Length: 240
Length: 275
Ligand code: SF4
Ligand code: SF4
Picture 1: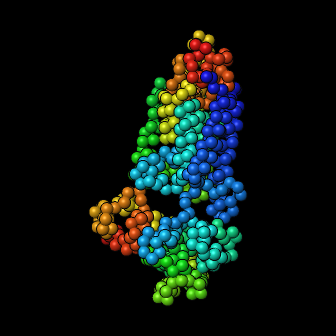
Picture 2: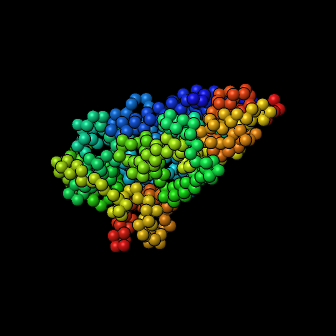
Picture 3: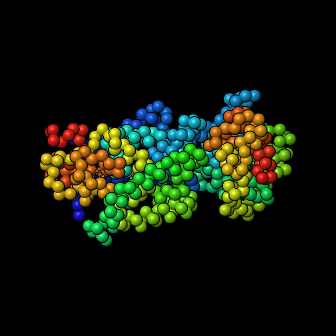
């Protein structure tokens, strides 16, 4: 059988369209990461979406879909109501917009913290994570957290004005050099920074995950609270 | 100027435009203004090589490498299937970076005329062509080791389609300028010496179902095919052309390309002399 250029070109198109359609029919085709957070595996909230798995790539709409909090509430909590098209703002932009304010961080973890308090779900925020003052007023009116949790959040809250002044605070922020454990830090990075596998496993009290897995994902999958692991690991790194 | 395979040119333009659109749209989506209907896929989502570098991760941790999505795996399978049948069609017809280099080569051709793409003697060049397998091994090992798409930091293709985002590493820009410069002397320098994906696809030339064949009894040994081959393959010296660098561009064939004698250079499942 002789193949002409045209036949080859058309065949490629058919193969490509067919392949994509089949994978769509099989529900495998995805050009973006899944926006369904992991669920709590046990306890009172088993089966509910876990705010600990909110990622920087989530938009306000994604958080709304996963946790049923109105987009207006979410944007108001972070002083972004005036933005055009607020539903599509991605949480990872928080680091750029706010960054470190008064030594506290307004970033992806702030959204996890806010959602958890709003819905009354168990979550321990990373150390240094803060909320903005408008978020506290919203929580006071609509949140499902305990009074104790609210007063702790209020104590740490930062004002929107200070946040705006510090807009460029995180520029040139290089987290490899800082050796700072964040939600996306992988086991391989811990080893690269100089921790041994044994050190890490001692803190986890179980065998470590694959090198390419993030410590936070590992904790969520194994029902460990990330912050209880993060702090001792950070301490080890600081003392290296 | 030699005859060019027209349908290929058009398909190249289409895929280049689609890739550029997706790249720009992804940036617009990040600031909340995506072009409607295209979705918000990133360039990584449509890169079949993302699927290749993810294989190890997929097998060991069940997840893809960071920023790579399932669509990459689907496209990888499609491209592999097409390569199994037709050889590296992806390189010759689809890859926007291959297309980009070909467009730059037009300037080189104007500058150097017949000397274009002949500066490195083939007897040395044929060994240099194995460099891309070194790159491939390095990329696979490093990606499996780190779980990140490390090649993006050196990838001129990524630099070309993301130069406005501020996410491109300086090394990738240097690579892009090097490719730009070299393309003025050599056709597809990145494909020939560096591209790890081209290296993988090139291997399909050894098992492709429809190989390139020359009819020795009708061939007039004019070497038109050799001169027109962008990858400098000595096509006219062989009966069945099995070369890891062939990109199935059809530029050497009788029907669509440079060969002046009909039915003499063809992609054909059967031996041409038997017809
Ligand atoms: S060798 Fe690489 S750059 Fe060249 S066309 Fe093929 S995939 Fe594209
Ligand atoms: S041998 Fe023919 S089909 Fe293969 S790269 Fe050269 S010109 Fe293209």
